[in-house]
Amino acid sequence: KKAKAAEAAREQVKNKTPEETLPVDYFTKLGEAEMEAKAKAAWELAEKDMPIGIKYFTLKAEQDRIAHEAEVYRLSQENMSDATRHFHKIEDEKEAASLASAKQEPMPRAIQHFTMADRAIQDKRRAEIEDMKVNPPEMPPGQEYFTKQMLAEQGRKRAEIQEMIENPPPPTIAGQHFNKVEEQRKKEMEALLNEPAPPAIEYFTQQWLEEKEQQELAAKAANEIPYEAPIATKYFERVDEMRKTEIEEARERTRQKKMDPDARISIDWKDYTKQEAPTVSSFYKISAE
Image: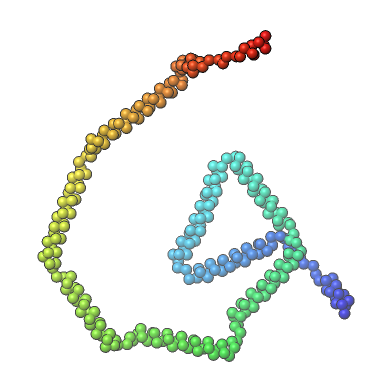
């Protein structure tokens, strides 16, 4: 049995037509094409319900973007130095050579085989899902029963809400009482707002307005008079100026001394330190003779 199975597998392999060798970027381009098709379908679906104004300005924005990119590229090419243009040309040639080699390079057999098998499984599942959307399978009896009950309950609630909106029920006795109380309170508030203010409030309001006007006049007059610093502030400003002048003069004197070599004073270190040479013992003198 094992020999027969092995022989049958060999025959199957021999009779199987070899798979066509695909380029290494085949699946990348296939994915890009699928994404582009999905984006195009989404755009067409949105375009159907899109107002004319939005559609016009959307297309105009895309055209303006393309024109702007072309203008930027043209200006960059015009203002580009020869060295930059040379290196850009080298980079473009390298990129083109890389793309050409990628197109010519074949995909490994193992990767191609298992990727194609996986994509076949995914395509099959996708087709099954789309078929279920078009022709949904029959629901089990229990699920169908409770689904119908749920839909009926939702329809009943929607009908009740719509009926209450169109024909609202009359308010209850308590509701009528509180509505009357609220209307009476609103009338009292309007009457209070329309009544003149008490004399005390009028008096203090007038006083506040007068004080506010006096403060504004005083602030305006103070702003018109030029500001004069106090005597102490002027004194300390003069002291700061004198200190800065003295520091600058001392720096200038130090700079002049550094530049003038004759200004340096020679020092007699022997007289300054009061040091003498040490005496030598007579023993060392005799030994030397």
